[in-house]
Length: 346
Image 1 (tube, rainbow, N blue to C red):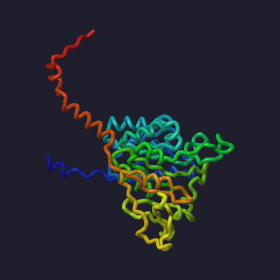
Image 2: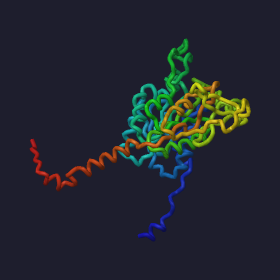
Image 3: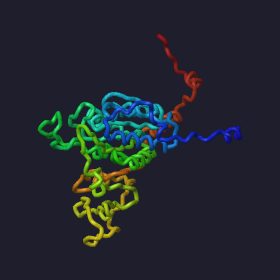
Image 4: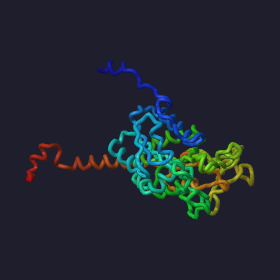
């Protein structure tokens, strides 16, 4: 038997192409979704798991066409309910690698309740949140993340509402993993997704994504080749928060408890003064400050912002069942029949 096992061929190494379905990708030319799709397929190939171990579950919206383009298990569900279905799939089969795909409208408007409770429960799945700050599929209405004053079909004089900050919402729901990327950086998004799947619990990956039709240039300050290096701060645990084209800018903590952008070499500032990123600290205060930075006052934080270890919902559920079984005097059908209990059949 041992010899037979030793002679078995090694599992086939999959490539990103293996995760592509035979369906035509029907997103607008130039849509940021194309880059995210490539990132996911690249990341899945690097995970070393068979395709049957993945399930991609989506709601409604442009991004929610995702399952059609993946050669994995998939479920294109209904508006705002992807998190509920993904939670059920993971609880029923904890071995599945669940990727839930939602847009800012699908996840944070009609799906807001499911979003915060999936995070609170710490279901072991990755929520890929596309944030283009607009409703694209329904032709350009403002969304929960649209900037104040934005003119759209449903706010012709500018929206008077204050937008959600997805990270702030997740941290308020006790998120243990939060990361952010941009659609134009396939390598970074793939790296983040690998970290997200290693985390036990709900991993939120927000992708700042461009809608070329209804909100083109929403994130241009951090994606334009002439300005992106000045407004992107890619965070890595244990490394100093340094950015800028010349890698001479960084963050320090000001006396008022707020982050301050400084230039190394000016006013006596050295590299040793720059803050070191700690993604693993349970205290969410610094993660909250980092995730809420906005350009042009600050760079926008990308990478894994928060990654804190905690038991997932499934782990606690399985342990609870095991504990109850061990405490029960009924171990098998014979125990039940010999327990002395009687039943009447009507």
